[in-house]
Length: 149
Image (cartoon, rainbow, N blue to C red; front, side, top):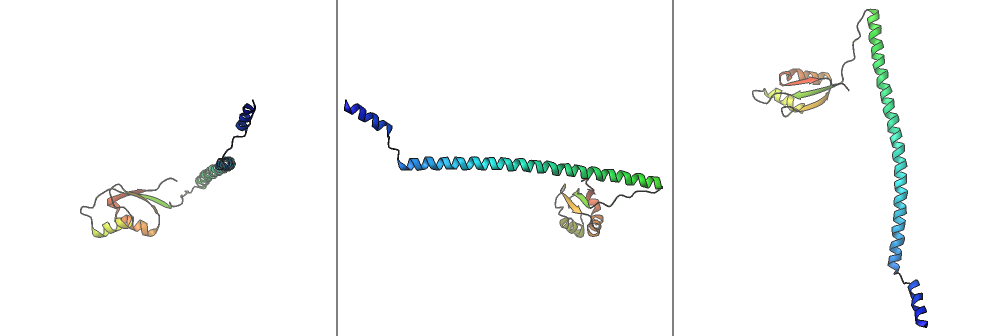
């Protein structure tokens, strides 16, 4: 009868609450925004990767040219019968070896200034006259060397 047709029509037009519709719309907008942001980030990351790779290649080329220049300088000096003196180091690595027992107060103070407070502590330092003078005074308590950079 007539009632059967009426119920079919009602099934087609199920009332969805407005809040649910708004939520769906909001979720779709967020999903679209997120997809756009993700794609933008991917393209940016790819460009950054290329840039980093280029920079690394430039560093490698720079280091190779510096090594080559060193070799040519040494050869030229040998040919001229002189010696090539390498430039002085700019950086030091200092490491404390001994404890505090029987240490002079001034030596102890220098160790504090150098930030060598415990045995086996190490610090990087700039090479200058002041630091070299301090190192001479505390020489028996630590070791130092020039790191290859």
